[in-house]
Length: 232
Image (cartoon, rainbow, N blue to C red):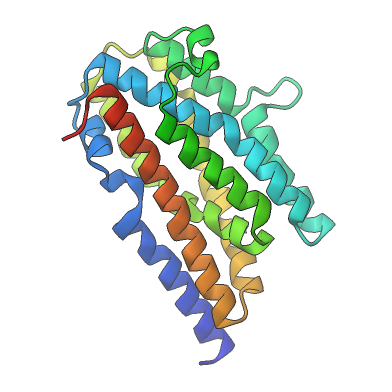
């Protein structure tokens, strides 16, 4: 197989993961977008997902430290600012706290992590450790769930507006930003993966990394559903 064909095959393999394993297929997510969750179950989702949001910039800091060039690091560091904020810019983690307020949670409660299920913490911490100890290529490949995120996020926002009128609309700003940022970040990460994964072994590792990340997101919803009694 020529280089161009091998690169195309890798992209196809990565993109094929989304329809099969992305967490929009999870029963809890299906119930969320169908408008079937109670207010307390929605709050549990927000509280659990906060832990993931909080840990993403830490994950990205590990990736940043392992990247092979200053050019890559200058690009990747924007992800940390996008979540943590920079200067007068409010980051995604703070906007997730605003979503918490919009569903009736206090910042104190969300920040205390009292609503974080043990399974959520275990899965997210495993993802951070993955980024810390695996190669930069695998860590970057694991971020490619962002290839699948924007349409799922858009559908989720539309569902919240249609089915959960009690949620304050001001709390949805997080999703509007991510619709643009996720596509931008995914395009860059995919180009790096395709360029660097020149052997079948490396390509297989990238596919495995993305499958692992899908497992992390799925496990977070498993833990959330169990914790709030939304197991179907």
